[in-house]
Image (cartoon, rainbow, N blue to C red; front, side, top):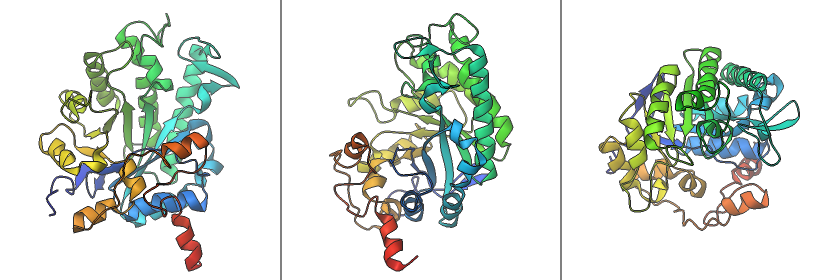
Length: 339
């Protein structure tokens, strides 16, 4: 099969069977939630053959609202119809509660969150997860990577607390684990729980992360999303994802420019350093990438120019691709057809 047998093999996770190992990771689009443009964007990538779509980071404060969450139901149903599974990444909106900007520990512009505020946020994660499952999402993914709110708690550089949520590695795990446990209970056993984690960052090591991911699995995580997955340009692809996979039995997603190097993706799967491969900018450039690769057709390749993906993000306008004018404009096809 086109030389990518592992990449296009199915994977059973919980009650869900993914048709292949290709994951569209959560990427900010700057598209209005529930808009025709955003709907067409996600459906195009499901129709293009991705196995799992992870919707971009969305505020738990919004998703806990049934009216807001309901805006996403048509997209969830259309992605399912196209043959893909779909999850949504959960994050804290502006790291705030009760209108006050909060963080793991106080810094300029942010106050240290109280224990009561953290418990309220954990409850809000649970409510958001329950709503997401109610409207049909297959999974939810708390965002615990890249210095965002949950990741701050794991870092002793950002987390200087002296209460139950800070200090030792065990205490710095507590916020992430509390969120996972609450989400697991609220969403139910048939909902996938993913967790995105940065394996090495300011103040913590790969060994610290190994301790954490083992506890995440015990708490109910079904899929570990490791970002970034490779430690340096000289390191073997997905070397850090592989270190995490050594200590867990759940599937691991490897992240890191695999769209331009599918042979490396296949190799990572063959060598057992990961079970799933995230392709981000490659799917921005060509929503049909999985189907085209499977069928031996030529793809529109990402040149990593960052012009209309990251470039548009910085301009706060909807993302697109300099190599493909259709990217981000898929909704115009429906308008032209009178849909």
